[in-house]
Length: 307
Image (tube, one colour):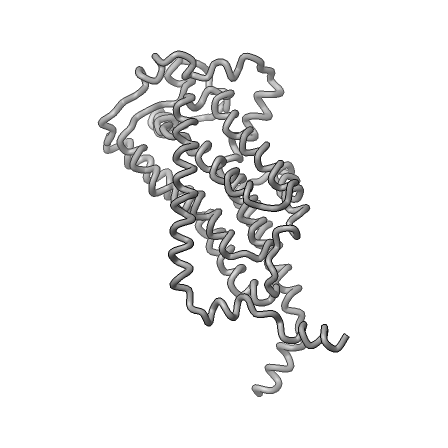
């Protein structure tokens, strides 16, 4: 029985199975996030030069760790949004905001970012609305999925920690202490995202957490990490896309300039914290696991020698 099982395992193309499973997971991530065709096109462009950043690890060994890890991220992506809004509602209902900054922020010259809309058209409004609506998660997922195809668990963890995993719990302190509403609401302007709120409470929950801008902090963290990669296509695309996300928050009159600056500082500190955590955690990874993950496929080595 044991011999037959080994023969059956050896006769299957596990690398191809892993690739198919990976493509299915990426597709499910897009479906869960209601990605448009433009989202997938952007992802494909960012994957074009992925081989320049791939590490020298056998695909089969990587899939043993990589597929479950990507699956865990996918699971929390599907369930995380509901948890976030439960927390936001709890903060609003308990009114734990000792500092209320609407008037103060509105009194600072140029802080409302009206200059960002000095030139505007309906077409630009639609483009920046698309960028803003997807930017909160798409910037992170593009980097996570690409790091997956580089076969680097370390990079996957770096992007994940620098993104939602660390930023969500850390930013809640600010959102629980500071009540600052979106620019358009404070100034009595129309909502350029054309959001529909079922109740007044729903609207207030949506517009109350501005400082720091998490759209900015997520995208800027991804930008900083993307600059570490070798592939220029990916770097240029992510710098352009993430910068557009940050600009969209001001163009659409959602975030104040100081929100954006605070978001960038917050992102920088989160990336540095992530680096420290990963470096520290690496010391506790068993050498046996490192050996399995980094070891070359023996069969491949034999074939190379034989050739």
